[in-house]
Length: 224
Image (cartoon, rainbow, N blue to C red; front, side):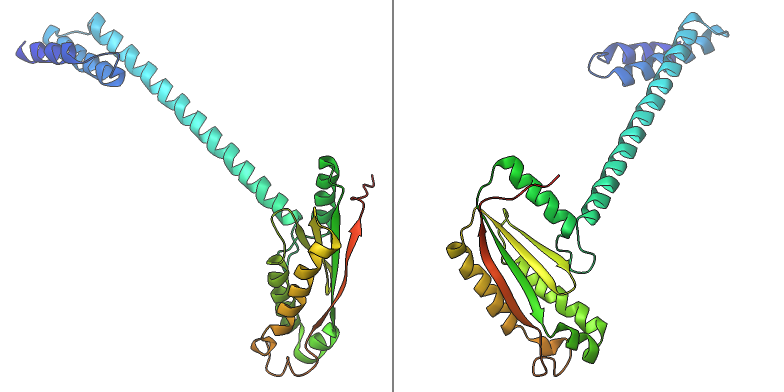
């Protein structure tokens, strides 16, 4: 009886609104003690078991909801990752032709009417592959991509068209404003220490850059 009294005191001291789970647990404990004193299953114990089952069902439901949310988030992350890969060049991690198309579509939808195009082509790149191997050629392309990525602003895009050809699309830019950035890219590429890739690369027909542009346009031409 003393234990039952203590359990009832404890139950009375718990604010059901502030601590519903603790209150339910205290009800169950008090009901079990009461049933033990009575020597039989009481109505209080049956109610306590009912509360316990409801609490367990609620926990399972909460767990299922959490698992569902985690699964949905994982699917979103995987979809985002796959989407990003679809628009990136595998080697240089610059945008690819698909990314260029999406970027142009975005400019069209925003009504952008002035862009500048800078076409970048590496002279003698085939010689680099033939003499030093394709791994050296790949590293050369990656380094050029890093330089070009640094030449564009957040509103621009740098893409690898394929092989040793790259394109900078500069939004809201006229030729005179874009020319210094294109020339700075040429200077940076020429100043790169290509001998770090393979000894003698700089002195033996290292990749030189030819620029086409910057060319003004009246706005991106959208093709369906």
